[in-house]
Each structure stands twice: as structure tokens, then as C-alpha cells.
Amino acid sequence: RFLPWIWAGLVILAPTGIILIIAEPQRTLGNATFWWKMAMLVVAVGLTAWFQVSLSHDAAAWEDRGQKAVARRVFAASSIVIWLGIVATGRLIAYTY
Image 1 (tube, one colour):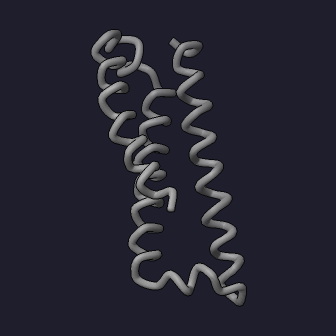
Image 2 (image 1 turned 180 degrees about the vertical axis):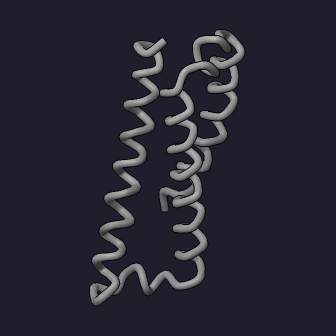
Image 3 (image 1 turned 60 degrees about the vertical axis):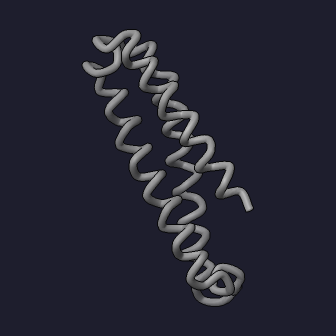
């Protein structure tokens, strides 16, 4: 139920990020922290897209509490860690310039 909100957030995130890059390209494009953030963002978007496709094919599998529950927990934890990493590196860009 939250997937539409995630994609809407991405639609807002992309143009605002581009505006920030255009404002000070030397600060962001030459910064390794920025590129770590972009790499994590690509991974996070890929995980979210994979999750949505997987959910649309077999939603009942995500409700099963059996053997695959550990894999779903690892997926959820890694997704949270990646998004927290995106937030942290976004904040660090200002301090690593």
C-alpha cells in the first residue's frame, strides 16, 4: 500500500536533486560521498522495483511465515540500512567537500 508513495517520492527526489547538482556541480560531482549515495540509491530503487514485481506475482508468499521468513527479514533489514545510508551520505556531502 505504500509503494505508490515511494515512487511519488522518487519523482520529487530526482528533480530536486538535479537542481542541487546544477547549483554547485563542483561540490557534488567531485565528491566520493555523493557517488556512494548515488550507488546506494540505485540499489534501493532496484530492491524496491524487485519487491513490487515479486509482490505482484505472488503476494501470498510474502505473508507466509514459513521457511522464507528469514529471507524476507534480511530483505527488509537491508532495505532499511540502505535507506539510512542514503540519508547519512546525503548529510555527509556538505562536510566532505
